[in-house]
Length: 495
Image (cartoon, rainbow, N blue to C red; front, side, top):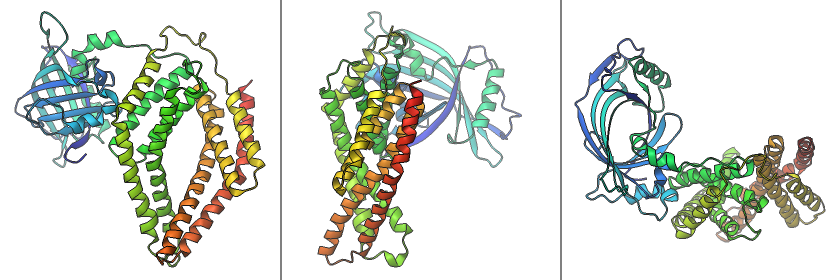
């Protein structure tokens, strides 16, 4: 996002009592010098929805004054000990910057985002330097005072006071070994691993622990909950225009739809439920950008593999740059859809579906979901494809095999039939390449006609078309063996 700084924060927190003495860092390998920094007074207001949706996803949003990095800070989970931190400059008022809200819009949606806590910190810091004079890590000794805001208490917010240590790597992408050595030094000095992942989590602990729900125990509902979480992750990636994000969000959307279609009774849905239509529409909107992204990468690779004398005319501009422009148009359309109340209501419905799973449900009580029905659909599609003669009908029939294999893959994965899921994925990938070839050939025909009308050399279009046709033939020749392997996996899964 233009104007905002984004970096990876890697740190560990530790609980300490008031009497604990800060450690010395002498003798730690790679550390040659330690410098104390001036004491900082930090004052932060934390923001969330009334139902603390950000905190439940381990996300913090704050407006902080004081210190070297005063401003708005949005912190997102990024793995063990790591968070992606996005900064925005301080604004004149307390309104959250729109560009930060957009990052987490799939979580907050159209709910109000308001102050939930105030945390002040007196920070004593030491910077640890390496052999070459570069800063390696920062140790912070924090004295913290915190209050909740707007908790409905008649007696006013209760004050919490504590002391904690933090050790943060300056270069978050490297230094895991150093982080372990520093952590051991803090533990030896009497610290204990922090009981909460952030200061805000400690302040809101009572509320969050009260509302924590148990995850579903049956495999299909558990898979559904995991995929809904995954959708929110890819939503953020799409908003950041990360590589392959549109594709992965579309894949996740389709996984959710397949799970709901194949187990609609389990989720209390009819086969024509509106949520299935909405998921299909979302996948379709994302598909515009995804298809353009695939074509741009495909043509760039193919043209790069041709001898220079075989690349004639302004074909790169038409195929590669043209596809990239269509990707940007498709991305803008996707983002418009992802900022709409319609999208928020879809996410609300998915959340409700996950939340309504009975917490007491056991594996024994869950209705079993078999793979037999999904596999029969794959076999039926394969049989139909074998009887097609015209190229267009054959391509459509092969695409149906892929779609049926994809549904089988998701169902098998949700029910623990890993080998079946693996074999179905092989068919899906193989015929996905076939379908990309179909889309590419259609696009090449259209672009060749436009090039011809403009008086351009169309030789290379024909060459690429033949390469795509040969690739499609190769994929179809391999599908029989892949179906045989799938059949064996299904038979084994039945016993």
